[in-house]
Structure formats: structure tokens, C-alpha cells
Length: 308
Image 1 (tube, rainbow, N blue to C red):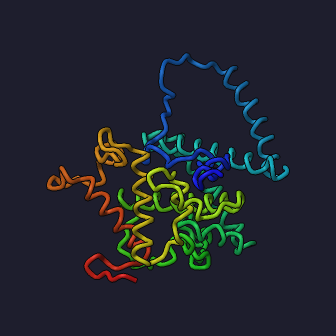
Image 2 (cartoon, one colour):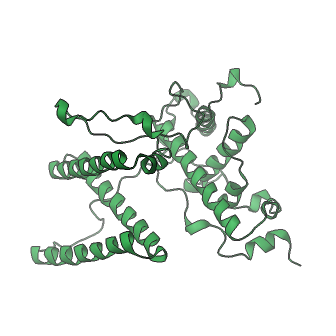
Image 3 (tube, rainbow, N blue to C red):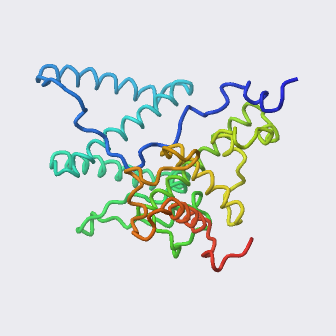
């Protein structure tokens, strides 16, 4: 009879889930130039491409909105990826001063936000089920009173599922570079855990089988499946923070230190710029990451902390 870890490994496709890893680089902007040598595209070629693209996009939309579940899910996923990709390119061009791109980005944001607010007015429960997994929510603002809707964000229970223990007085700064990194890592670990547990259930794998795999041989997904629900328990938060650190290490592996992240990677340099921290920068970044996770869990500062 095969050993427990071999039994698990034979249940392919088991892990990794969708072959997905933490998105690298974290702070990258898309390459709008396309890179490499390119020839000019004439107007006829452009019109032909746009015609084909619009037709294909309409087919994809019909599948995503009306197709069977087996086809609908990947079609909707592709639509989402394309939408985010196009928005990222518009954002990059707008940040470089392209007024046409800025105008287009404004139109997309205005239309999408107006749709969300209209849907919330008709089906608040559905919107609330989505909003509880987001920390930000778009609303329309205008200097004209009749065009400035009073939208009650508190009705959405915004972020209640993501950060159930974090109060509005939390010291966590999601707008800082460290805050952005911590929030993205937390969300990634949370989503990976949800997917991993779904696969465990689908494949009828016992958690004890995963525990039978040596820790050094477990994948991120396997470790995620073993995580307890995120809460204010200190040991639980530490486990989540350790897995987040591992995600960071797999995204930015250190050139000489196995299982460590490269604190000097271009996208991570700005996380700790204090001259006095040079030489121990990696440890300082990890300390900040762990403290961010404690803040998200509603746990007091280290000096006031007691085991829950």
C-alpha cells in the first residue's frame, strides 16, 4: 500500500490549483510598448483586427452570460482577465500623461461604478455578498447635489469577510507600500486556502493525509489547506504570516538563500529604506508583514500582546 503522501500525490489533478502562483511582480506596470521591434500597423489592418476582435468578444460575452456552466465559467474568467488587462494598459498610459487614455479610463470607471450603484439599489444582498470580500468600493461623486447620490456604504458590510476583526481604528495602513503588499498576500493566502479546501473535499482527501507529507515537501496549496480559519489567535496569525512569507519567497526567490525572499528585488526595495536597517532589511520587512497580519486580525501591538 502506498504511503499517505504518495496516495495524495496520485490524486492528480490535485495540487497546484490552476497552476497559479502569487502574481509577480507585485507592483509591475504592463509594457504598453509591446517590447522588441515592431512594424507600423496601417489603418486597414487596424479596422480588420478591431472587427474580428469585436465579433469574438461578443461571442465570448454570450457564452459568459447565457452558456452552460461548463463553458460559462472559463468564458467569464477570460472576460475578467481581458478587462483587467485593458484597464491596466489604460492606467499606465494615463499615468504617463496620455489624455485620451485618461479620458477612456474615466469613462470605464464612471460606467462601471454607475452600474454597481444601480445594481445595489435593486439587489443589495447580491452586492453585499461581493462587497464583504473587498476593502474598497467605488462610488460616484459630483459637485452638483442632484448628481451626487448619497450611497450608504455601511449597508454593504464592506470587507466584513476579509477582515472580520479589524476595526476602522486599526493602525493598518493599506495605502502604504507595506500595507498593499500585506493585503495582497493576505487575500492570496485566503483565496488559496478556499480553493485548496474545495479540492480536498472534491477529491475526498483526508486532512491527515496532507499532514503526513513532510513540511519541507508540501506545496503552498497543501499548506494553505492545513491553515485554520483566520482569527485573533496569535498562533493562527503566525501560521498565516509564515505562509505569506513563503508566497513572497516563491515570487522573489533570494539568489543565494533558499526559501527566503530577495529583499533587494526592485519591487521590494521601497518596503524598508531606513539606512540603519541595511544588512537586516529582510528581517525588518518580515517583521512588518507579520505585524500587518496581527493588525488585520485585531491583535494588539507586540508589547501589549497576550496569547488568546
